[in-house]
Image (tube, rainbow, N blue to C red; front, top):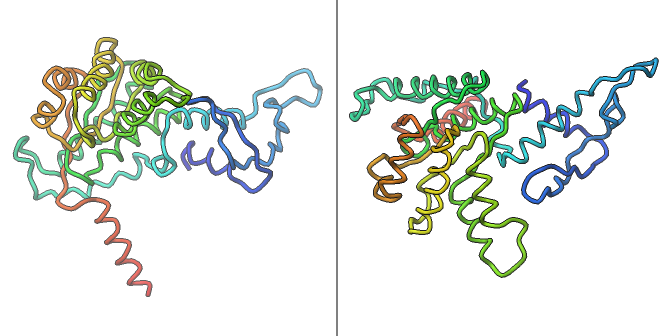
Amino acid sequence: MDKVDSVLENLRKPGQEKNINLPGNGSAPVNNVQTGGCPLCHDRGLIISESGESAVPCQCMRQRSLLAKIKSAKISLSMLKCSFSQFNPNYYDKNSYDSTRGRSYYENAAIAYRLARQFVDRALKGERPDGIMFTGNVGSGKTFLACCIANALLEHGEELLFLVVPDLLDEIRATYDNGVHDVTEQELLDTARKVKYLILDDLGAHNYTEWTRNKLYSIINYRLNNQLPTVITTNLDLAELEQHLGDRTTSRIVQLCQVVRLLVDTDIRIQKRRSKDQNTDREI
């Protein structure tokens, strides 16, 4: 079991429910996380020797620390299940070809997987890996590989932020309302600009205005200038990105990220559903 899965499993065992305050937007409490108290340290965070002369940190504190990082990373529970061990190249056809690169869909996927693993390996060595932009049609595994990167880094305690671009833009717009907000536009932008590892998911799944372009340019330009590793997923190719985002932002993305193309004949989600339905039919 992966470390992230282990944390979630342990913190959901039946027992007394507690609200755990975790860092993140507003440090809001995470409700209904069942802990039941730690039988090793009795929630002190330390395991004290019988003599009382020494103590070591309890593993429950490491688990809570990881849960805090998961919360602040803004990764959904479904995305936490993604891991490199689940990558299946057989979803990519060996006989279908990407005419822009002269490679099969299968070969493209193998390259994308290798670069994603290299990103994590370099990051964990303390290096600054080149960013990656996964492009391709819907259901081709772009977000899956981005989540694999995120979870692998989280398991080693790395600081990262996973942002769905349309949601981020909605959060920024919400700060303009007259009501009271926990965060300001500047705080949201600064968090995205300065976090050690940033993943921008679904770039392109929103309306493009000058306002939108300026916000995205601000994030991309800062991260490029400060050599901060960034992973992007988009359904758009470079020509479409330039059309929607403008050449100054697209140019910086290309400088910041290696561009990797993932293509499938059939949406992987549909392939999985068909396979599941076939297995169910056999059981019936």
